[in-house]
Length: 86
Image 1 (spheres, rainbow, N blue to C red):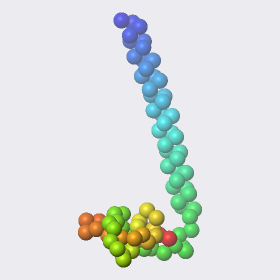
Image 2: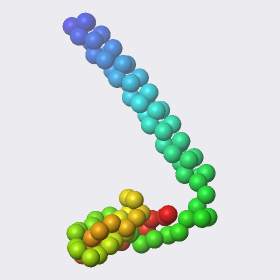
Image 3: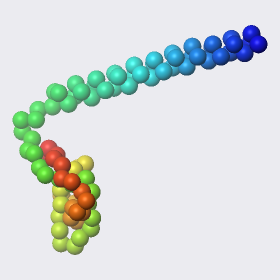
Image 4: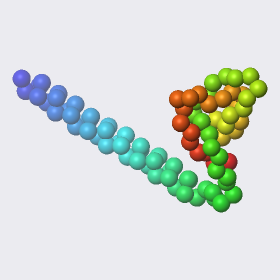
């Protein structure tokens, strides 16, 4: 019985340390992203209306949000518009 309790205690301690290390790495990456975005000069960027979903339609072009550029197609009726900067 005692070896089982010791094994569970060791597993809990190792699991907790692993979780804390992962949480620190995630928080550090989040802070790096926030700092990079805050340093970006948005004064020269223009705001555009875009869509996250695009359907194909010959002869039409629509601005696609992930790339903020025009792609062949049109916005579907169920896709709400969003904004992107370029």
